[in-house]
Length: 291
Image 1 (spheres, rainbow, N blue to C red):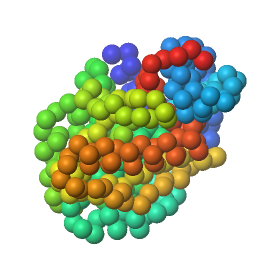
Image 2: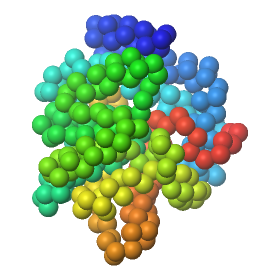
Image 3: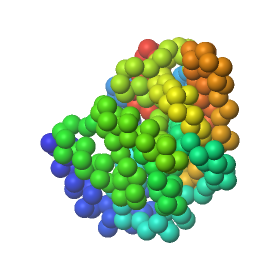
């Protein structure tokens, strides 16, 4: 319950904190957390070792890892700040590149699956979609205690996103219904919350990744569009909407799933290589190695 009350307190205080000061304090808190939370820091450095490659030095990996912590702390500041932004302020906060690609993906009328990862601030794309009146359904991992889950979901859906529990079977039916209405479903491609993913090469090593986004697209005919948000200097965001993926549908589901996963993974690798400090992922993607 301590975490719950800390979140409630932050929800009361953050709206009164000037953004520039708030982000500065959040960055400072992130640097402090990097030094104090040794387990998480070790996990992040281990993940980044694969992303940065064998040529990266310990100093370089440590510098990027600390920035990951700083960015994640700023994401928490965003969480409490966004509910108090107007839709017009959200539009000014996020620069969207490739919006027309989303409209192109909706043209067939079978819905769009927005696929992203824990990059930048994963909620930002959803917030800008909601700001532009695009109905969107996404999944949320349950938090404990339940009061914390309800509170965090309430903050995240303030602009109109519909969050469903990832472990509720009714969530799948709700996503299918949304796609049939030619609406949007948003799913993460780097976190296997339900432990039902598939082993797949990722930065040259096998990792267990979720495949529900590709499976859902193959089963429903929906289009996959990958999106990423990147925190910019000044703590605004660039949101990138990539061209719709062209999934193969040969009738061999296993082969089509593998081909679709390869496209998704390649796009994730591209963005993570360019901006490794934006990957705010704190779970072991591969076996943890000391760095």
